[in-house]
Length: 390
Ligand SMILES: Cc1ncc(COP(=O)(O)O)c(C=O)c1O
Image (cartoon, rainbow, N blue to C red):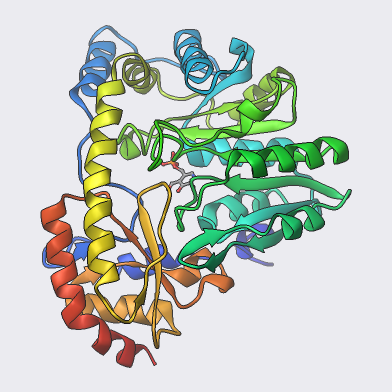
């Protein structure tokens, strides 16, 4: 008898983890592999969680989330993106990851065609694979030092048998951002074909040119087939708290609630209180993160552009640089070797799809002093790591 289900057996192990687990916890390695910063969560969240626990918030919560948090998120989205969402559009989830999984379970039947704009964080496509989806990737291309999406190719791939298209903007790993024009074109095509748009907005507030990146939901109406996946992890530095949310047409809310019941039966109440406090009082914290990231971005841009073998491609958002290096053909071998030769941990491009081999991802959500140190080490060790990876 086989040990696991075919779907479980077909999942790709995460190459980011594979590299990181060779050196996690080693004090002399600067790990820039995961998508999180070293800055702790604000006291605003910590105090709210502590107060909630002290007051006895120890019990099950409604599957769709606490009404007060849903109302805060409704106001936040309406204010930030100029929307007119009803509270029934909002479902609280136990992370952005879980939000994506609920979207996949809500929409995808076995064999459904799901188009993903790649390269993308691998968990997104894997969520739809678990739900039985048949994944088609449309790749961004590096053109003149910027990431570019060929809209004709994307539109051509969205045939009438497509169930959903998944767009993560600002994108992990490239930092690419879909502009309003392309969003409107995509929505207009998807409306005609009845295709769902899953918009992964977890990096929405981490955008170089404004307070939030162009938002897919603001292109349409509350009834449009658009689902926004969001998370407290990135903009509010709350990776370890596990809290996220979904916004979508109100008809989906009971379906999401039902699926939540059978996935985790609600998010923790005291964590939701922390999230609510951050949405209502944490704008200053988001601004502070945006300023820190702007400094780190300037540093990595200067340092990467100074390395002759590196092809730097300017990110418009998120907190990553995704770059290629001359002579690099085995990104996993390179990242493992770099730990030895430089004591620096990066994520291999291959983790984000076969089309991304030859690239590596660096998370720059770190203090500039640490990044300077990482680059000093990288410059000394990368050539040897390329040789070792052949
Ligand atoms: C594009 C993208 N979506 C969703 C997530 C999920 O974030 P979390 O599960 O921490 O809320 C991540 C985390 O790295 C991400 O990069």
